Image (tube, rainbow, N blue to C red; front, top):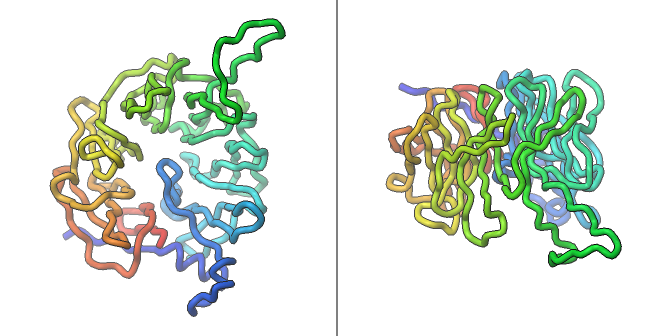
Length: 356
């Protein structure tokens, strides 16, 4: 009989760390309340360390002025404590662990446009890895930890010289440049453009070999239709190889522990939203909808388990619950838990961290 995962609720840990009373909040307390950020596509709210002993997450401060500061916190499962890793009024988010667990990369807008910062967890200050006028939209560590792949717009075209001819129309204050795939070396900070011009890349996942990535991309970035496809792309040449052409919107690409299967959220027919869980065998074959016939509720987030099954957050009215989904499409509803999971991360085979 499979053992049910033990659940660690990070919201409860955070409330303890901030010494917030459990009594009902007053209107003033509600306005000044800090909260844990949720998952948003590739910017998942929880990032579990490679050894499963720690989880990084994002705390959103109370509104101040025109915005809300966001900072990276760390939960240590051995002590049960949570504490802030970054401080200040900037927006620091999207934490990602290096493969050796010694460094945390995250996005920060301390220089206006979001860029990648690296924070050594053995001690020391965060340092910028990328800088520039163009923001970073998403990123991932290479398997060897020596570089990162990231998404950022293609370079701006050179300004037409005086007296030159420019037949292209431009809309003021709108940047239509598609995101392209880059790599950056951790030691030197040298960056290299990988994907060719004319392509827009939206998500990325490294393959364990380190020579290719799985991406969501399109060569028709100006189209008002869903033209994204799933490709593998060679890091050395930028050559695309199509793996699947899902109907309608899709996202949340995630490789299985053995890297043999890609899971993602996709539309049941053509949209309008990705609500079903699909799997795609990377050795060849068509994608399969695991939940279209067995789960009549939208899947919001999922994580792979070590046995090859998946744990998924599914909407349940105004709340959500956890379901175990096998690769044969079998859905096992978990017994009622005293939580309403908003995002999840697997600490180990038996322990699950949740944002409640």
